[in-house]
Image (cartoon, rainbow, N blue to C red; front, side):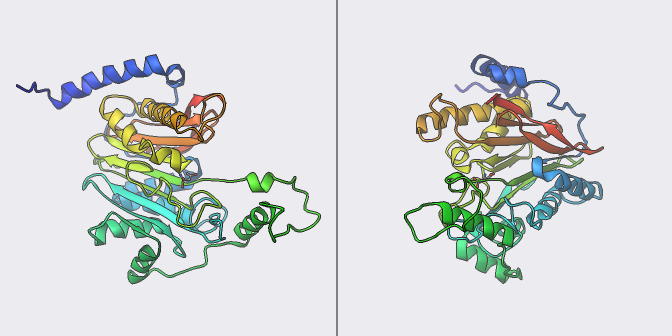
Length: 355
Ligand code: ASP
C-alpha cells in the first residue's frame, strides 16, 4: 500500500532534508545565509531582477500597484532594457553573433495558467519578450526559432529594425579583426589594445525579471542577446523553460543570467523552484542550484578550471509565493535588483565561491 503524505507534511520534511543537505555539502551556503535573504509578510507585491534591472523593477512595481497582470508588468519592465542601446547584452544594442548579426532569445512564464512562450535566435525584432508572450497566448506552441519566429512576429504587426548599433558593430569588428593573424581581416593600426585581448573577450548579459502581485500571482520574463560572437543559431538558456526561467504559482519563480550552456545542462531555474517547494529559502535554493551546476560541469570537463571550480559565471534569482526573495552568484561580487513594494534597490547576492 502506498503511504500518503499531505502537501504540508511533504513541505516540512523537504525543508529539513534540504537544509541538512545544504549544510553538509555546501559550507558557503551557510556563510551566505544572512541579511541578504528577505523574510517578507505574505500578500505583498515583489519584483526581483538581475542587476541591470533597477529601472525594470521600478516600472514593473508601478504597474503591479496599478493592478496590472504580473506577466505584463515583467514584460514592460524588461522592455526598458531591450530598448536601451547602452545595455549591450539585451535587445537593441546587444552584441551580435560571429557574423555580426544580433540574434535574440526570450521567454515568459505565467504562474496562474502555468503556461509559457519563447523565441530563440530571432533577428531584427527589438522586443523578443513581447513576441514570446504572443507565442504563449496566440499559438499552441512553446518555442519558435529563427526565421519562423520572425515571420510570426511580422504576422502580429512587429516591425523589423536593424538592432546593431554603431558601438556594437565596432566591438564586433575589433573582435573579428583581432581573432587571427592568419586570416584576411586586419585591425586598424595604432590601436592600443594588447594583441589577443579582444579575441579572448566574450561577454554575456541578460535581464531576468520575476514578479509576485498582492493576489499571489507569479510571473517571469528572461530576455537576452546571448553570448557575444556566438555561432549563428546558438540558443542559450534564456528561452529554455526550466533553465533560464521557471514559475510554479504554488511555490515560486526563478530565473538566471550567465553562461547558458552550463545552465541548460543542469536546468537550474526548475531546480531552484523545486527546492523552494521542499522548503529552502530562495537564496538557499539558488546556492544549491549553483552547486549542482558546478558539480555537473566539473564532469563536463571544459567548463572547469584546473582547481575544479567553474570557469564561467552564473546567477540565479528567485522569489517564493510568500514574497521572500534572494539571489546567488557563482562567484563573489554579484548583485541583483529588487522592489519590495516600498522601494527599488540593488542588493548583494549570495555566492558559492569567493573567487
Ligand atoms: N544566459 C545568457 C545566455 O547564455 C547570457 C547571459 O545571461 O549572460 O545566452
